[in-house]
Amino acid sequence: MASKKSFWWTVIIILLTLIIGFVLGTFFSSKAVGRKLFLSSGNKINVILDIIDEDYVDTVDMRNLVEEAIPKLVSELDPHSNYIPSENLKAIKEDMDGHFGGIGVNYIQQDDTVMVVSVSPGGPSEQAGLRSGDRIVMVDDSLFVGPKITQDKILSTLRGATGSKVMLGIKRKSSDEIVPYEITRGEIPVKTIKVAYEVDKGIGFIKIYDKFGRTTYDEFVMAIAKLTDAGCKSFIIDLRMNAGGLMDAAVNIVNEFLPQGRLIVYTEGKSYPRIEAISNGTGTCQNSQVVILMDQLSASASEIVAGAIQDNDRGLIIGRRSYGKGLVQNQIALSDGSAIRLTIARYYTPSGRSIQRKYELGKAEAYNQEWLDQFSHGESFSEDSIKLDKSLKYSTYSGRTVYGGGGIMPDIFVPADTAGITSYFINLENKDIFQQYAFYYIDKNRGKLDTYKDYPSMLAYLKTQSFLNEIVDFAERKGIKRRSTLINISASHIITVTHACILRNYFGDDAFYPVYMSNDPMIRRAVEAIKKGEALPESIASKSKEKLSYSRQNNVPNNFAAGFPVQIPHQLFAAHHEFTPQH
Image (cartoon, rainbow, N blue to C red):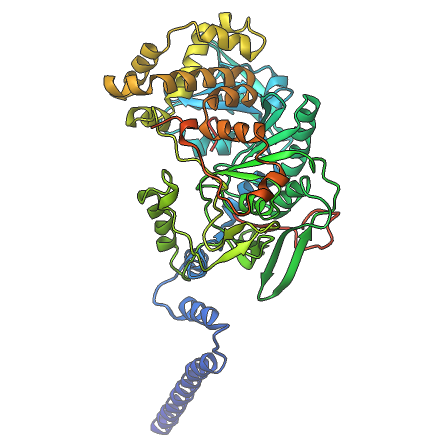
């Protein structure tokens, strides 16, 4: 009896083993077949991720794996499509929107301490009682000094949601006491137009610094109104080092200068049929001379402005060949808070030219190296060194010849001015010595400097002071070796930048830029062109058979906004340094 039971138990176990083996084999087989059955070029990445997640020998952080893989995937496209992780998107959005939540101070980090250079008028810090020269040594009862307090740490600590509070421990030079200040963070504006002033009689100068953001056009209109009230009838727009940004800001600015019915720019892509932006004739500067300043870092939206002005023979482009970015990105938000900026179209100037430099998919490094090679070949110093693709020939409104395929060539070339720029001077700039010394000098002489109520009077006083040796000594204490020959060559530049930085701490950019750029050869040439009437449309049209050239003796030797006929998606980028960080 026992042997019969044992026999049947053995049979049952064998049958169960066979059934389980069959089921498992069928499961794994069907899983593999299913993967093969539904595999396509469109879902292959998802299938591979699923296989890794389910079958890989060890547990894998799939989120981290995806975050690492996406940039590599996007990098196989053009050089300007890119992935923005969620942790970076907020800062980028704030930058483009023109505001952020913060306490409203400009600061420097000196001797491992955060020093308040200036407070924003009417901002949270001024309302709380902070002053220029204050040292931030505590934040929310924690020590906030030392080498571990990095720029990223300062940024994440001082910025925050509008309405949130932060407790700062402040030490002033006149006292050893640390005084607590509770500050409610407010909305801090980020201006893209750094300065607007009368650079010469009747000539206004506007500096659009590093980008075109959501507030740039409104800032531009206010700058034009300010300069017009001051008697300016001609304008120089400085787009040097401006890497681009929102397309509609560039289009709206161009519209201020063109008569009705002129093409400003058009875009076209595989999934985006041709869309044009046409001037509507409401611009306030249609009869003004205009000069655009550009250099090799002017890109994208900057090139839209320059291309429209040049192709419509509306004004002059002065400077050096621009970067050469003719691609349009759309920023697409993803559900996890990240985003992708994907190239969706090319833009074309009114003559029909694309100014995009040549590139190969997935070869961004070679693309960037080619741009750097232009300068090692002397492009910044000699117009003859610039290689143009003569097969990409186009005509402006009046018949002048322009070329596509690699940036915008200026109408008047101005070589880079290296007179007085030595390795010693560059070292001072790179180590932020000028700004640090300016704070040191002001901190030591605040009583005297406080008596000056405008920058011209303070500048006159500064020019009576001897700075050079003191700056060199200060730099030496900061680890920059004294180089007597180079110091003598750069002496004038060192003094000028020092004056500008001291003035900036008291009077802002309105004082800094007029002094800092007081001997700028490109501005001088622009002023000369306007005084001679070279930037008048009729003068430009008469040059259709001639080549404007730069006279070296003048140089130091060594979507679219409402009102336009068409609409395109709003978040379009024709792309995409501050001396003192703002928080």
